[in-house]
Each structure stands twice: as C-alpha cells, then as structure tokens.
Image 1 (cartoon, one colour):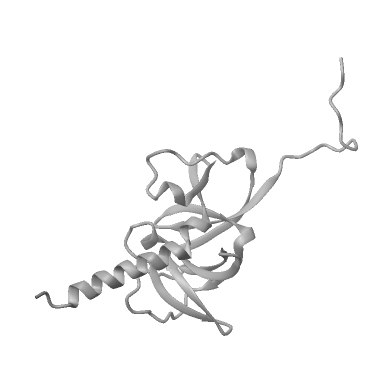
Image 2 (cartoon, helix red, strand yellow; image 1 turned 60 degrees about the vertical axis):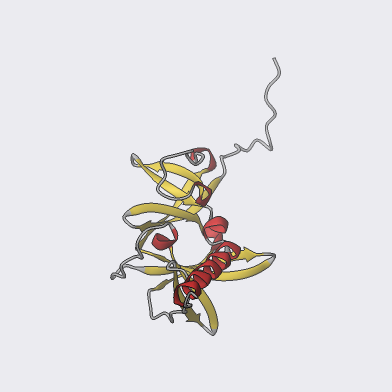
Length: 179
C-alpha cells in the first residue's frame, strides 16, 4: 500500500486566522486583523448634516478625515450609547482599487483570537439579527457564537453613499412644500 506523500517531513498544520473580537449591543462580533489599522479611544466627532443615522460623523486622525460608522445603527438598531469602554476601530477598506480608512464604533474590544479555518461555519440562512450578506461566517467559542463580519459589505462605501442620498432626498421632500 502506498504511503501518503510527506512534504519535507514537516507536519502541515491547519491554517489559522486572527480576528479581533468586540461587542456591539451586547453581542460578540469579529473581523480579520488584516484590515485593522488601529484602535482608538472614542473622541469628539464632527457631525455631518443629512447623513444616515449609522454615520456618526467624521474624525480627524493625524490630518486624515475619516467617516465613522456606528455598527449598531448600521445593523438597524438604535445608535450605540457612548460609555467608558466604547472605542473606534480604524479599518482599511478597498474602495474601487483605492484604500480608504473608516472608523467603526464598538461597545468594547475583547481580544485577538486565533481561529482555525475549519472552525468557521457559513452564515445561517435565517435567524441572524443582521443582514445575511454582512456575515462572513460564524465560530462557536465557549458555547456561544461569534459572528465574523464581512467588512466589505458592512462598510460598503457605495451602499452607504446610496443610502445617504436616499436620506437626503427624503429630507428634502419632507421640507419642500407640496402644491
């Protein structure tokens, strides 16, 4: 009987990925550390008029103006309450081939976890409290599921721009007198 081929007598270990885990609305979420630039304390933001509720405002980070997204509101919930552990995670996005930094408001940051690729399960077809296309996968840790977010969908700048223009048109329609 033939023996399985060995690669340089080395044991091939399962590939692990690292994820930052955090809380939003009391629920655990995670995103790949490969897209995270830094984590900063929640500070003063400048509100931008006529933006959807999930856009908290903009932040000046070392001379760069970044939009800041409230994940709770992006998921269709109430805006997050700002508390002592609230922070902003700076994420680097790919926007049509250009890099764009975006801040996301989270209740608190938990830890960086090593998660084997085989432990990541596909998004459920139903039952999630957020849009299915926002979910990259799920992993069970200590009898609790952590939702791994698809950052490109959650923070889609094209979709957020479209939603902002819809909000702006609705606001204009509400304040324009009808004849």
